[in-house]
Image (spheres, helix red, strand yellow):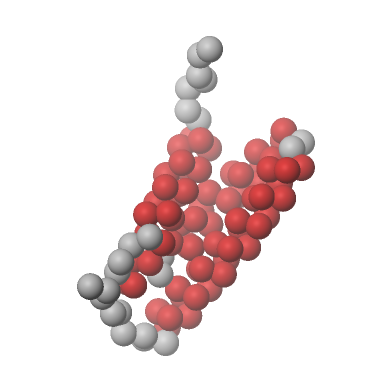
Length: 90
């Protein structure tokens, strides 16, 4: 079985997903704040893909993950504008 070459869409989804997971898993609060925002970058491509393929299960998962990324992005932006001090875990 051969794999098709990556499109720009595939690349954005992969980079944003891996980047979001890496940032959210960081020990540094300053980096963790950006995880939700980076994750949101790939969500339009997931939604378009689910709509194009007509896969209801993928659409449900995408909507849930988008809501979680929105929550994380909101918390990160809110903390940034509150000038919450960045505390490093040891």
